[in-house]
Every structure is written in C-alpha cells, then in structure tokens.
Image (cartoon, rainbow, N blue to C red; front, top):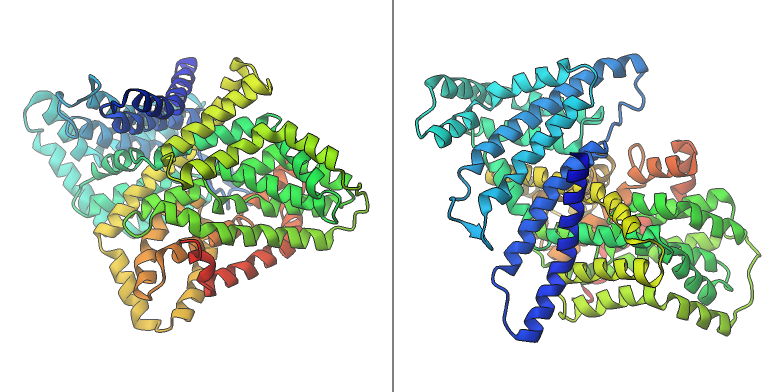
Length: 608
C-alpha cells in the first residue's frame, strides 16, 4: 500500500509537470485548443495534494510548531502525547465524515472531465483523511487515544452523517442524528473560544498546524449554523486554483537542483566573477541561497541542502565558522521575495481581488535586492579573510560555459513569465521539466530511479504546504463571511488616524505573526484581515503585500520560534540561542531594510 501511494504521488507529479507544456505545444502546432485543459491540470493538483498529504503524514513531516514541547520535561510530554493523538483523530474523523457527506452533494454523477466522474476526483479528499486516520492508528502501539478521538468525532459529525444517510438511502436520517448535531452546535456556540484556545495550545505542543486550523474551522462553522461542509468545499476551491497548481512543480525543480550539482556550478560562476573581491564568497553564498529558496519555497530546505557546502566555501575563504553559518541562516528566507516565489503566489491567490500576482512579483524585486545587498554588506564587513585569488577571465569564461545550463533556468523564467509567453503554470512546468532533463540527461547527477527518489523527497514539502493552504482557506472564508475584516477596519479607523502610525503597528503585528505562525498559515489567515485595513489608509495593495512578505521573512529569524533558527541548529549542530546571537547583525540589517520599504512606497511600486 505504501508503494502504491508513493507511486501514485510521483505519477501525478509527473503528469502535472508534463501536461502544461504538452498542451501548449499541441495547440501551437495544430492551432486547436485542448478542451478543458485548465480544468484537467487543476484537478490533477487537487488529487496530488490529497496523495501528498498522506505521504507527508506517513513520513511524519506535517508542519508543526511544538514550541512548548521542546522545553517540557519528558514526563509531561508523555501525558500530552496521547491527548494530541486523540485530538488529531477527532479532527480527522470529523473532516472525513464532512468530506464524505459533501462527496454526494458537490457533483452529480453526470459531471465528468475527460470522461472521468468529478465525484471520483473529489473522493481523493475523504480518502486522504481516511488514509491519515489509518496511519495514526497504525503508528501507535496503544490504540486507545486514536480510538477515543474517533469516538468523539462521530457525534460531532452527526450532521454530515445524516447527509450521508440521506444520500445512500434516499430517506431522511432518524431524528436522533439532528438532535445530537444541534446539541453540538449549541455547545460549540457557547464554548467556541475555549475550543480555539485548546487547539492553539495543542499546536504549541506539536499538534500539526493543519489539524489545529481544521479543528478551529470545524468549530467555527458549527457554531455559525452547522455548515461544516464548507470546509471540504473551500479545500477543493483553493486547491483547484491555477496559481496554487504551480507550488508542487517549483518545489520539485528546487529539490532536483539542490540535490544535484547545480549549487556547486552556480557557486563556481559567482566565485570566479566576484571571488577576487573582498567578500566575493559572501556574494556567492547569498546569491545561491536566495536562488534555491526562490525555487523550493522553503528557506529551511536551502539551509539543510546547501548549508554545509556554503559554510565550507566561506570558511575556506577565511571566514570564521560562526560568521559563515549565520550568513547562510540569515540569507535563507530572502528568496521568498523573488519570482517564482511560492509565498508571492499564495499571497496573490489569497487576495486575488486586491492584488495581481504579476504586479506583486514585480513589486517585490527591488525590496528583495535590497535585502540581499544588506546581507552581502554585513557579510563583507565581517569578512576578514585574505584567501582571495586574482581575477582570471579564462577561468570565469570556463565557469560560465560549465554553468550555462543552470543559468538558462532563471533567464528562462524571467523571459518566459514576465514577457507573457508562459502562464504561471507553464513557467512552473518548464522549471520542473528543465530541471529534470538537466540533472538526469545532461549532468547525469541522477538516473531516473534516483530522480524519482528526489521527487518523492519534494512531495512532503509540497504536501505539508497544500494541506495547510486548504485548512487555512476554510478559516479565512469563515472570518470574511463573519465580517471580521470590516470590524477590524472600523476598529483601527476609530483608534488609529495616522497612516505612518498604522504602518508602524502593522510591522510590529506582522513580526509577531512571523514568530508564532508558519508562513503559509499567516498569509492565508492574516493577510485577508490586513489588506482591507491598509486600503482604508490609501496604501497600494502591492506595497501592503511586500511589507507583509518582508515581515514574514524576518519572522524566520526572530526568536523564540523563528523556524530557520531551529533548522540551522539542527544542520550546524549548535544550540539555538548561539545561532540566534550570531544572526543578530543580519537581523538588524534586515529590519532597517524593512523600515525603508515600509515608509518609502517607491521601492515596491517603481516597477509597476
């Protein structure tokens, strides 16, 4: 079964990579557009996200915070662990039943896509939750906690169960079902905030983020009238968006490049071009770290994959190990400001009626360059190395020739996407296919079997992000439906009358959000609340987006829970607080750039 799920994930990922370019080529040659090609691609993404979610759970890589879990004594962790297991089981249980109920409602049996019933496509969602439940039971020696959680889930999902009963039998469910569900609606209405508090606290102890957010969404929709089927509907809606479809492909391209020899070749190009300057290796390290984060969408991946190599090059050029490791750590999150950053894609998709993704990509380029230059500047100032060779034009030309295939990729993205020749999905497809051909057939870093193994490594990263995107969209929908953005706008307008003061408070808020929330949850949940408030102060939506994303980039480095600090601690085998102290000069420089970007809108709007 494990091989079947993994094989399905890789096949779906391969189809996602190939279809956009094949469709484009076929239409260009024949002049005949392929019917429903966009729908096919986005529904493939939906099916992939479900399979990827199961694979992510199987590898125990669902994103979580676990802030308190790290500092709690072992005895307390033993007590909390079964509670978290029961909560996970309960939330997965209600999600499975609500998605199962919606399976019979969302599409009719006649609705098909290329002859495939759309109900069959949607069935991947309840099957994902069922697969996660199975893994939860299979991974625990004691079945008591997961069983207790599922038993709790059944009455909480009495409404969806009644829907399943009606769909299967054609008859109304016994009144008992509705009575139990109405009781749950009443309880959730009275205890909504305690339920949210319990789930947030559980997330701090290590409950997967998407479980916590899904549980909050289920409680919120329950107390609002019991429309819990909106959760699977929102999940399907966001994950069949063409922009979201690019996420797994950019992640795949990043992993293929990071695990192959691309990093070494790009470093050689930059080192030969600027390595003779003071701080040349620093420039090389920052550029390469930024490049890989841009493609993987996860700064931690860059630190894990290239941290050792970049540190070795920097120390070999005379930098101290502490300086080298702190530079790599601090440079890890800058890539989210450059195309084709997944953070920009998700922000633009979440706020699609306020900002265009294309404009947001253009608006974030100058701030991204400023961030990179600030890292380079601090790195050069701290560089006391004297191991610099003389500039050699023949060596530079040799490095350029060797690295030409790698350099074609970013050039192809810029020319293809920003000239409008490629759509975002086609750009992602080009990236993934080009990276595969480059690493397997040109560089021969992998054979096809090894490339499939690398692709499998990329799936949990994409899967972990996509399930959070689905869960957070449900929470965001409820907040918008409840009018919370408008309430927040009125509240801010009543107490904050200065645009400059609002921007200052916004930075404080977002840095705190970046400390305590992961990137994608913050974008999906917090940005819809911020955007209308910022618009009320006349702030350009692209400017707001750049401020938002830059703040979150700082959040990766900000104690107590900056994710990059923990990843760097693991990678470099150093205490977290030692990493945090070493990173402080870089963090201070990034904060100054943030202030510059915040109060001078030109940096965000100059290229529009």
